[in-house]
Length: 342
Image 1 (cartoon, rainbow, N blue to C red):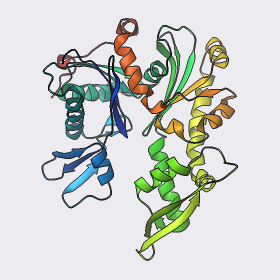
Image 2: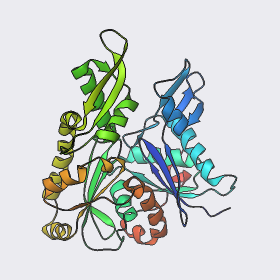
Image 3: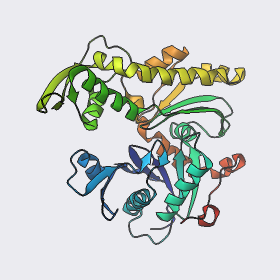
Image 4: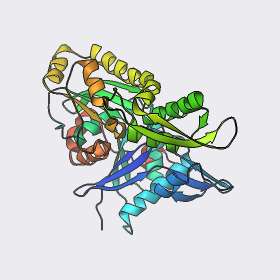
């Protein structure tokens, strides 16, 4: 096999890889378990994800990509190489890669990410902002001159942009997303019930009963952990509307950022968006009622595409097919020489 070009959504919580003509071929948690003495990865993906909080001595689990930026260069290179090899198998041809980045990433952060991808086995790399990839992945035509408002709520960051004619006229990135909500749930359980719960427990509560607006028919779940006072096992029952109280300040920051972005947008683009709907993508877009919360705040319809978590990776694949269009806006492939990789 040769000629594989890859679209990679290298997120805080997951790595999703698409192949041109094949679609999404890999979706794994972007976690690694590594030997703390040698800094060599032992496991990557699902096995490392489920090991978090259960690590034996000498093993640690981390996310080498945090808030859309590389937090550990060596482990990030090893992780990306592992997943790329899983897709490419025994191919001797190095692929071109289109990867997503947060809208407001600095030049240093972008060069570091390109260096990671090239060290991991890419021939050349083009970075494209997450909201633009999300729009392409949700079916927006790159050459459409009408304005589109995209909000991509991932694990580490929430990226939003107004897009027209294959480029972004307004952008905003805030570091409030799925991981921040998980942390808020852990804090709420500790402060309210004296329960020390793991981050996996908090994530399960968010997915199963979390909500962005109050439910008429409330739902409940059990939270298990350790009693802070006695150190013994403890179980409490919490409801979705109860958990909403600790999530509300974070959700308000997302809606406030969206309102602020509208204030900077030209009247004609606002008219285009009003005639269409807001696109809500990313893994956290599936939070119950988040589309309704944002829709009420902006007085607009909000659309959540099918499988919103995959939109960024699918958009990277679309960008690979449409590079001749994106070339006009300064997007190009960078090689090893361009970034002086290690």
